[in-house]
Image (cartoon, rainbow, N blue to C red):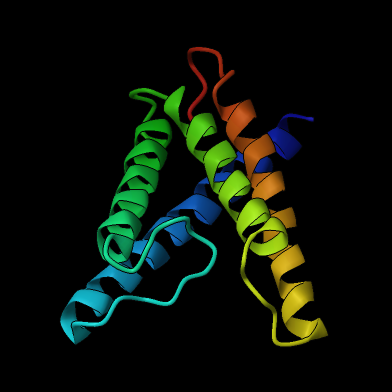
Amino acid sequence: MRFFGTLLRLYSYAFHLALSAFLLGVAVIAVASHRPPALGVVPFGEDEMVSGVAILGSIGLFSTLLALLRVFRYLFPLWAAWALYLMATGWLAGPYHFDGADAFRIGLWLIAGAAVALLGALSASRLRRGRYI
C-alpha cells in the first residue's frame, strides 16, 4: 500500500510540474509573439490572458515545489483542486468547443488525470515526519 501511495504522489508531482511548465511556456510564447493565447479553458479575458496564465503557472510551480521539498505541503492540494476545477468547468461547462470525439476523449483523459493527481496531492499533505516522498 505504501508503494501505491508513493507512486500516486510522484504522479501528482509530475502532473502538476508538467501542467505548470506548460502554462508558463504558453505565457512566454504569448509574450514573445505579442499575441494572447486562445485558451478557452481558463476564465480570463483577452486583456488579462497572458498575465493570468503566467500567474496560474507560477502558483502551480510554487505550490508543487513547496510540497515536493516538504517546506509547506498544504498549499499543493488546494492548487490541485483548483486545477481540476478549472479543467472540468472549462472543458465541460464552459464555452470551449471540441473539434471532434477524439479531442473530447483527450479532454476527459486530462480531467481524469487531474482527478488522480488530486488524490496524490491529498495523500502528500498527510505525510508523516521522516518520509521522503
